[in-house]
Amino acid sequence: MLKKIIINAFIGIFSFFFGWLIHDLFQQLLGLVILFLGVGYSVISIGYILFTQGLPLLGRSATEREKRRFQDDLFKYKKLFDEGILTEEEYAKKSKELKSNIL
Image (cartoon, rainbow, N blue to C red):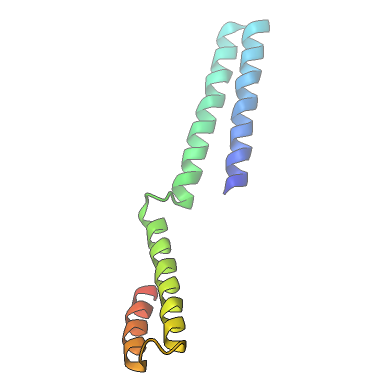
């Protein structure tokens, strides 16, 4: 994901400076069009990448983080069971609950 963002940002920056160069050397209007198209391309493409890959604020990423948290909790409870702190019944109950959340 980061590679795609960097590539699209580079394309936008290149278009921006190319438009700036055209604006200063040849035609003002054409340069401005290229300049703003470069900026627009960067903003739209990076926004699209972030939206499709999932931002931390979107549900898909939150669900994945919750699953990881449940997996971590399951490993913690397994460790407590292995150390003899939890009984087999307590571990079985909690692991069943966590596994249902993971799957």
